Length: 177
Image 1 (spheres, helix red, strand yellow):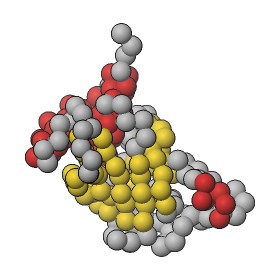
Image 2 (image 1 turned 30 degrees about the vertical axis):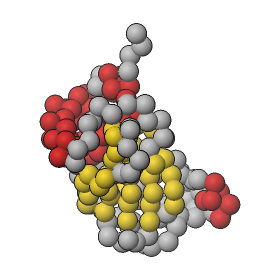
Image 3 (image 1 turned 90 degrees about the vertical axis):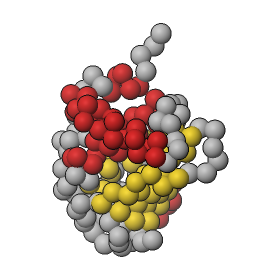
């Protein structure tokens, strides 16, 4: 039987720590919303002006998502408006997906956002850059950082969603609510 994504991720010390410290809390959070962690799918929504990152979830047999938790984005760079070139310090705005899991990040744990998307490539100027993440360590130049304590929860949720077969985890980033 092939090893599942969760097992592969838990080989990394920081992911193992996240599960040890946060699995019970996250399970209780989902249970309080009537969603089993063993079948859930997630959706991430962020608002730059408000400095908030929301986790929405649904059971795989449900149509609609439920707000599970809102996290404070603990540092920011740039201003309102889209990211149009490398080095502008901007957080992108638009519709993206998680495209990478980095359990050995320089910023504790990190989830890669697939910037630039098709719209960014049409509207951007020159080298657009890349490497936009939701990560820990509370520092940023164009990313969406959470505290290390909170990225443990979000990373664990994303690992569980991927382990449940969710290959595309949407991330929608808005300038404001």
